[in-house]
Image (cartoon, rainbow, N blue to C red; front, side, top):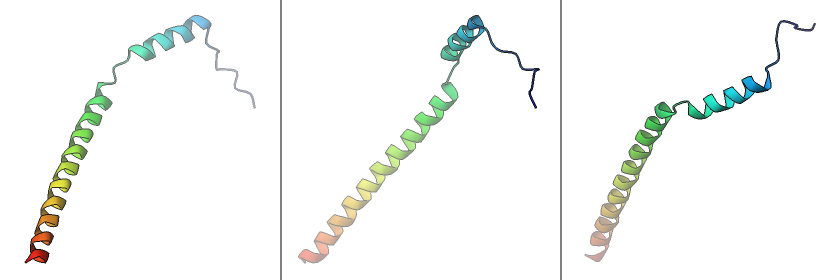
Length: 64
């Protein structure tokens, strides 16, 4: 069955969609991505500090 209700877009409409697509704000995802990056960076920093403390404590117990 062929759907004849759908019309094709013109070249001008396609060009307009390209322009509007480039202008649409992406702030929502950008803000979310920034928050996620900050969260992961902080978690990685804290993990590195914890591992350093554990390694230092292990060295102290081995040394004496």
